[in-house]
Image (tube, rainbow, N blue to C red; front, side, top):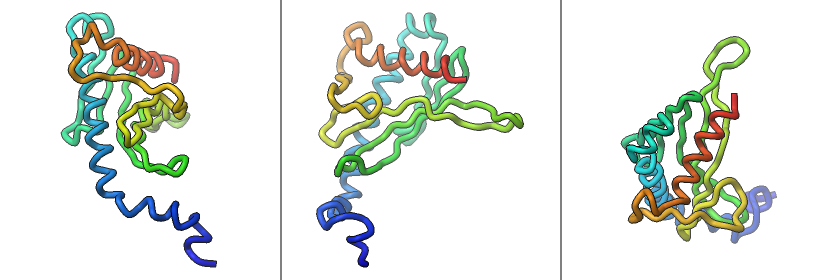
Amino acid sequence: MGLIDLYGDADSVSLLHYLSEEQKDLDKLARILIARLAKICAYPMLVERWSTVFSVHEDGTSADINTPFGQAWAELSLGIEEGEIGGFWNIWKRTYDKAGARASSLIATIHISKNGQFFLGKDKHQGLRIHPNMTEQEDTTAFQVVNSIIYLIGVNK
């Protein structure tokens, strides 16, 4: 039994030929998304309304999210799903286990496809339109995504 038999056919394995290039492309797309979400959280009316701080890390692909419901963190990872390499921006709520030790619970994933579409969760039927050049008042999708993230932090204990 060869490696191809263990890990898939030759087409599946060939996905890895451009992995470095695809990682750069997905990082760039993630930075656009994350910057847009952070900009929404920094809008003065929403700072007052949500009391939420969205801090993007230096890499531009990870962030800390502090809300009245608790803290969360998010980071980009790459994976293969349905025969394609994609980005997965996983959002984790900081929690505590029964012994009182720090733990994390995955509360949401934003899938980033290499063609530039964003999907909340694994449902790829309706992509999110997050526009980096719109004003906060115009970009209702980014507003709804941030609102959903805050809500999910609140309902996950």
